[in-house]
Image (cartoon, rainbow, N blue to C red):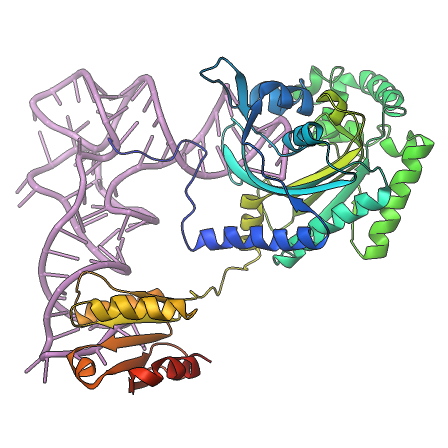
Amino acid sequence: MTSFQAPTGTRDVLAPESARFARLISTFAREAQRAGYGLLISPMFEDLAVFNRGIGEDSEVVTKEMYTFEDKGGRNLALRPEGTASVVRAFVQHRPLLPWKAWYVTPAFRYERPQAGRYRQHHQLGVEVLGSDDPDLDVEVIALLHDYLHRVGLRQLTLRVNSMGDENCRPAYLEVLVSYLGEHQARLCDEHQEGWEKNPLRVLDCKRPACQLVLRDAPRFADSLCEECELHIARVLEGLDAVGVRYSRDDFLVRGFDYYTRTTFEFSSSALEGAQNAVGGGGRYNGLTEALGGPATPGIGFGSGIERVLLAQEAEGLFDNEEPALELFVIDLAGGEHARDLTYQLRSLGLSCDRAFDHRSMKAQLRMADRSGARIALIVGQDEIEKGEVTLRVLRGEHEHHQEQVARGVMVERIRELLS
RNA sequence: GUGGUCGUAGCUCAGUUGGUUAGAGCGCCAGGUCGUGGCCCUGGAGGUCGGGGGUUCAAGUCCCCUCGGUCACCCCA
């Protein structure tokens, strides 16, 4: 095969799917801007250390999934695997006024084997807020994600919320967790026979029956939170109740990045059958700005995968009756000049309009008009030209097949009547 | 990174125990009397059978390698 195709794990998004893609972004932009978030556009690659330090040296993403490369100046760079680290880097670099509320949409790259709902290049949109540890902000951020997912039509959603404690209480929890896991090591799943000591939180996330059994009586975050963390999560949950966002508390919700403290949350779609059913998630982080060389600043944010949301929308049957939006299609049976001039005129009046090229037959042009989804075809042939008129033929809607010849002077007015 | 599965026209697939010029449906293009779409009829274009190597008189069909898709694990969005 001498032809090319998109690299493994990447794909092209053509119309009409690309329109769904764009719609998600504009819906999210509207929600975010309404809540006072400003768009951040930042580079798709960063100094490798931004991600190493930001996401955590031991995290799965950093150790085995990064797209790293050296540029011609010998710099070690990496394509961004997720959104938060670069947003925080931008924050540290520019030091905007607090609290800083930013939203973004970006491709994200991870070198891993693709499967349903998982790509090497996927796209995420999300927000980050730097400079406040007010639990009401957690509520705002979670509600924003909730509203966005709801607005794009998703209904079969579940939200899980947890508090992972902070630098005061987490060490103590890890200690009891490690000692508990130690006592039951023999009963852990094969995968976690090793590594449970170094990374005990991963075990909490394990879905294998063996680990699940052990976890049933495992110590819980909820029982070892310090007073501040306890108050924080209580206020968050109270706030979610107040704004009507439904959730379930999940003591074992730990997310894959090392930076989370206190609140973590994740929305998953029960309409998605595969294992890849998380449509958005995030949480709070406290040490991130310092890790990237800035002043201690609390932060919170989430990322939501566009491809995942599209899959969830499809699974919920939201694309079943999509109609193309084109209004007009011009058919020129003479030299093409009329199609050229009419489409230009109609478009500049704000009407959507397409035409056929290459002097095709009447039948062919009309077929194209039909396929385009246009509601009305404008036909210009010798007859119309001589009379200074245009034939309007209705292709869809209740007046389908209706056809009339109108003078150029009243054409636009008549088109608007037929479209309304 | 590990494992399963698949790879024949733009798409979905058929191709018998290896045997002449590789098929169908859909889509596309052109006709079905002068300039009228979706339905119907007729015709047409389009494939180095993912790629490479091997076995054989003969390979889409068997073997090896490789690339890719897909699904699962891991992890995530």
